[in-house]
Structure formats: C-alpha cells, structure tokens
Length: 168
Image (tube, rainbow, N blue to C red; front, top):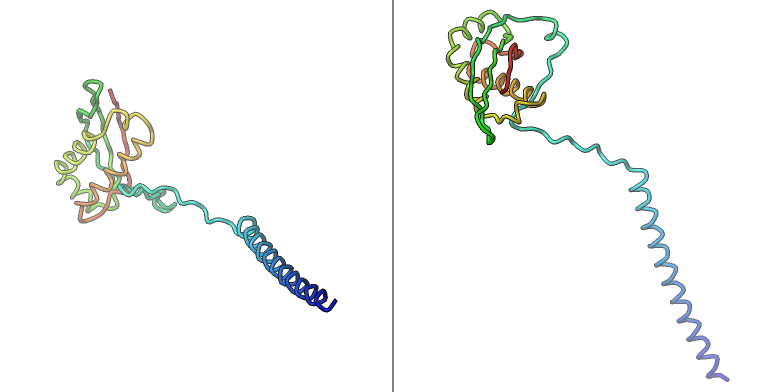
C-alpha cells in the first residue's frame, strides 16, 4: 500500500504541473487576444497619404493673393503639334500670365521669346489624351508656372490663365 500512495503522489505532482502549464498558456493566449483587440479596435491607423506628384507641386493661393490682381502679360495665339498615335493633332492656344509686380512685367516682355519657347516645348510634349481633360489642363498650367518662374529674376508668375485653348 505504501507503493500505491507513492504513485498517487507522483501522479498528483505531474497533474499539478500540467494544470500550471495549461493556466500559463491560457493566460498568454488571453493576453495576446486582448492586445490584438486593443490594437485593432482602439488604436486608429494614421490616414493614408495621397500619392504626391513630384513633378509639379500645385500651390493654392492664399485669400490675400486671390484679391490682389497683379500685372498681366498676354502670350499671343500659337499653334503646336502634340504627340498622338492616332494621327496629327494640334493645340491652338492663348495664355495670360498674372505676375507679382511691375518689374517682372518688363522682364517678361523682354523674355517673351524664351517664355513662348517654354510654352511650345511643354505643350508639344503632351499627348492628345492628357490635354483633353480638366486635370491635364491644370497640370499644364502648373508646369508652365514652374518653368517660367525658373528663369524670371525680378518677380514671379502668380497664375497662368488659358484664354483660348483648342485641342484638335
């Protein structure tokens, strides 16, 4: 009978260890579940950033800039062939540039051949499809503004206005 009690004690000790292991595993699983629930339910994900167009950064004018109209310079009508797989397409357009001050107005008049060259090269490298929709036209305006501002020294172009724009 002494042997039976020894076996019972050993069986009891083994059962106690098994129970302890089961409790520890259950506690770990429970803590992991609570952690996952807190992460997914309570912590908000940061809003996804919109893809940025690194080629051109469009900057909106402040309210003050929108009310103050700067000097304007017209770029007379021009016709330029554009890229197309379907045949010959061209753009007939006229532009007006709004400038920041009178000094840059004189500089723009002196640099008109350089400005027209920039306009013709930029629009000539666009496709028919790009120039058909509103987004494409906004892109062209932003690119023109950036390109012309790159060589003006006495001021800046505030806005580019398409006063005539036909894609055919």
